[in-house]
Length: 341
Ligand code: NCD
Ligand code: ZN
Image 1 (cartoon, rainbow, N blue to C red):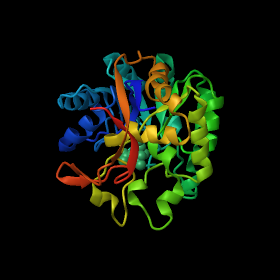
Image 2: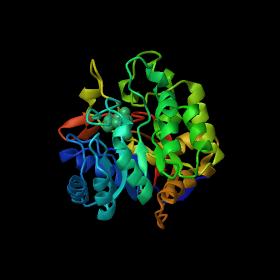
Image 3: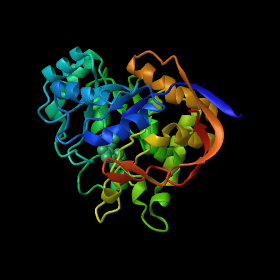
């Protein structure tokens, strides 16, 4: 096969940041995706509908054809009324739960899920998705066990309490998470990133620390990578594309205390194609990238297409990022598929 034409995909989990870097981040995403769910972990976080409307205006001002689907950042104080306001605005499509301290810019996140039961009740009533960063944060829990701990201690009890809640388990990294979602109701879905399909913790750590492969939840052992690969190869429609592309300047990553996040937007669909081809599942790429997420969110599938050509090319070693430099995911690697210009 020399060309692969797909319904235009969407990115159901994306960090675009704010300010001058939007020139880069919005256009890198728009080259391939039609819509993207925009994460709200700015400084300060997007906690109100008014802030989401302002942020969307800054994204739209970039003049690309990307349609940003906005989210609100849940705090201990998010009210049911704010959820209702977001829903009524028509631009807020979901809300994001960051356990306080779990990841980049999560300090204002939720300290105890009971604090936001009224907000979650409202989400359930409205059918608006709760997006979860699924890691427990207690100091005593090993970083490699934090996702599994979240399932047992937080997510399973939450879904028992709110059985009609629509929920996306974001950027899953473990066989436990994949199994949990597969066995949950049809109201529970999951996103999977390119890095968690392509790499495991050996890639991160063997032969020296690779700061540009450091993201949260952290890459796991190869058996977990395999479980995610098996799940996407199965074609299960609860799993869909969410890059979690999360840019940080080179200096912030190559540091004594490096930031978490991989910047995949410049080659996202090609990285997924590489991952799917490696497991002989290219025939499952279109549903994963272009159908399952839209269906889950209750939105129409896109009607235009993109074409990938079998054409070896190298991901750039570095790119400009505002006044800084950024190292993209897969920098310097040769990929087999290239988006047709
Ligand atoms: C994200 C970021 O940098 O905003 N980092 C990451 O490693 N994925 C935050 C997040 O989604 O956890
Ligand atoms: Zn993220």
